[in-house]
Image (cartoon, rainbow, N blue to C red; front, side, top):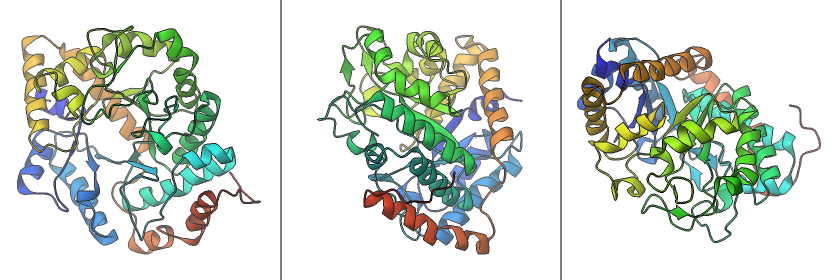
Length: 368
């Protein structure tokens, strides 16, 4: 397999419209791209999103390995929810932490996951297991399950189990914790003075509990912890992604947050970012919004492999992790039949669970 095809399979990219352009199809197929992340700009209707997902999956027939693509989305509930009606509208997960019913949290994720699975989405960038240690943190806010690491870990674990039960690949975020920041990493680089001991006694406790629920991936935070690694933010830090993450017991896939966020691009060249992320220990590179950036990133990584800066064995190892994940966790490729989708998306049971959480009540009969 060509180097660009190995590298492409450890990349996930965004596409710009509600169907694939000719250039996007070419890039996906020629480079054996591993997955696509969907955003609001890609979604118009239930029928259209099914058509787009099928179109994306059909590109695999022209790729080097013919493997299904990962189709990802940010569906946390509350503010971060790309799918609108007729999909069920889910309240923010903070309500789950406040209600403190693990059975209800499990059911929330299971029902949400059923709808994602029905239309062919196989990865949710959830749950958010950031402990909200700074109440002024508007970026996280009610995206967090709460201020108590025990509560966050308990319900992060329940969310993972619910998604897995509905055949959705899961991704805990944002390691090692984004709950103490005031700066939005989409716009600038947050810097923290916490030590690893402080993180271990608080934020990392929530991640450890979530990891034990068999979460598939962890997403890195674009935060610089000056007392831990004064040189690199977490996404680019070997100290975090190879050394410290091992202390949590996590051994699965590390995926970057969007490499086009200004926390990184304001400080580092776009050609350096993906190379350093892989050298630091990331397994998968995520590009979301800028249409040319994933091309720049792919080319930079291929050159780094050819020059020996990144050993080819590192790329092959990461490639194998992605292939194994797809083989183990993608049970069907593309949307279900239309009549099955109609019975699942926005069904009465899902709306009941969402409304129960919204109204802060725990239904009497919850089967898990």
